[in-house]
Image (cartoon, rainbow, N blue to C red; front, side, top):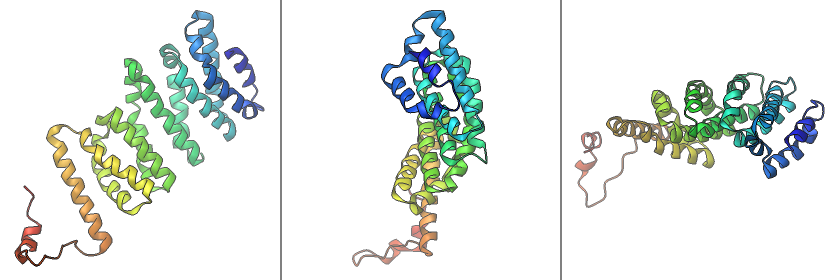
Length: 261
């Protein structure tokens, strides 16, 4: 079956036309998984498939590259550790190039980044491949953080990607804490509901990215940034009015600025 699929996607001119059928077959029959258990001849066929996907990812036509992205997603779900190891470097290079390209469409960039994080997840049970993917995270994060200042689809995609990283490789976010601490409160308080909800979830997960000794301090800094953002949005300090039965001294400047216990 994989051999037939390979013939179907072998023509650049028709690959977009046959793509829906090819994806349906990949979903329902998992031919790459079947190849993984059939020895050397099947490994050669799997390698030919992966090389064809690599070629599509680097095609000059954007629609063909997008077809390559969709095929790569299913390929990653089904390939063996050996197949992944043999093709990870060229796939990662193509995806990083696509995500960093100024001329690439935004949806292509977002899809490329999501596939790089799929690689991170897929390699979780393959120590050597996991190590190689972790070394790519600084470049991936360097592409994700600017997206937090772009339009809503880019912001949401970046936040969801960062949430995945905070779950799978939390230590990778430590050196970006100050930048995230400045960006996330603004997204939480000044964005549409879906972006704000994702920002709130990421803010809640950030303390888990730090050691116990630094988590409380980082959380306090985030809260202070949130308060500062609220004050800036209202153009005045958020000082509550005293209730009739409460002494005015409870709301004095000294009391409000006293460090919490």
